[in-house]
Image (cartoon, rainbow, N blue to C red; front, top):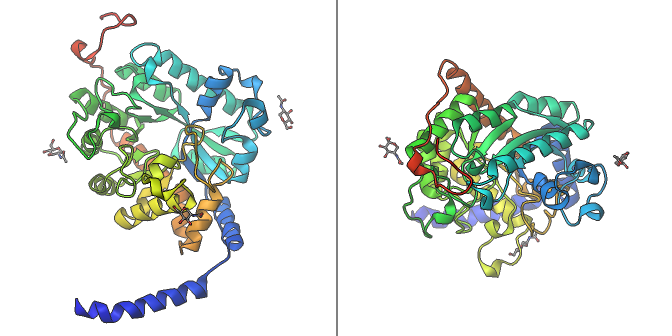
Length: 399
Ligand SMILES: *[C@@H]1O[C@H](CO)[C@@H](O)[C@H](O)[C@H]1NC(C)=O
Ligand SMILES: *[C@@H]1O[C@H](CO)[C@@H](O)[C@H](O)[C@H]1NC(C)=O
Ligand SMILES: *[C@@H]1O[C@H](CO)[C@@H](O)[C@H](O)[C@H]1NC(C)=O
């Protein structure tokens, strides 16, 4: 221990010296960031552009031209093709999301409408978008010069506790399912029901665990953003495949219930899974004294997670168009390179930046596909959720 006090001042002066020797300018860092993102696809784990289509133009895709600046067309927003290209987007999970006010009512229909609008806008811009449903497809689209377009679903309310609905949305192209949004389903609890600091909630019911197993069998990625701590632990303890948090941050840096605690992150490392750091300001900074979130805070969460569980388990899930106040320096989809430039200035290697950008997500997706292949001889689950678990309302009959 005492030796530390002798070594420490020496180490400090050495590291100051090395920062000076290797310091590169912001401009150089940005140029290198762009070069890296041209070599391997940046896969954004969470983009809510489909929600803008629904909220502003009722999914009438011809009322907007994504090939030009959309802000004059439908107002403030984060995503269009020029900005995606400028930001070096390699691929994105476009999100099928509808409000929890529809849960148990018309959520399934509305969810189908969101899958439909995603597929239609992908087809509308064939020079820029390519539908992707496999891990290999991400690389194929990228090397063909297209933005790989994957589809994720954010909230189990859109499958209404039905294995049949789960299987059919897979067939439509859904490759991850967030078990909940801000409402619990009859089989998984949302983080909104978490006590803070951590308390015990139900997590997953037996039916919820069967949903995980069925997703493993089909090759659908499990997404734990938005679920309760108990559901995270139950899912990690049930899954045979790696899983993701598509847009969540480190709870230790920002004690928000949407963020992930260290012990769960350690389970995620054992799972070989991935947490995709999100740019939602209120999940980056929690203390009023830290001011508006910026690139520094996003890089801090990424480095915290890297230091705790390793660079193989961190990615990016922006939540663009799903949040109102993005960080300074990460205002929209054109700004991803700023974050990479910040990490370059902190000494990150090209190899690690490629992992952060997309290699980790592709590895996880391949892992999910391998588990699916290993379960190919297994039958689909055809149980129904126990009737008493389904709330009866004017939209639901028995049987
Ligand atoms: C959208 O904008 C691009 C670029 O200006 C243009 O080439 C294209 O024709 C427009 N599409 C429609 C449907 O207006
Ligand atoms: C995981 O599941 C096993 C068996 O079902 C159980 O004994 C164990 O306590 C669970 N672990 C956690 C962390 O919940
Ligand atoms: C981000 O904000 C913090 C204050 O919370 C500040 O120290 C830091 O310099 C800012 N970063 C940038 C890139 O402006």
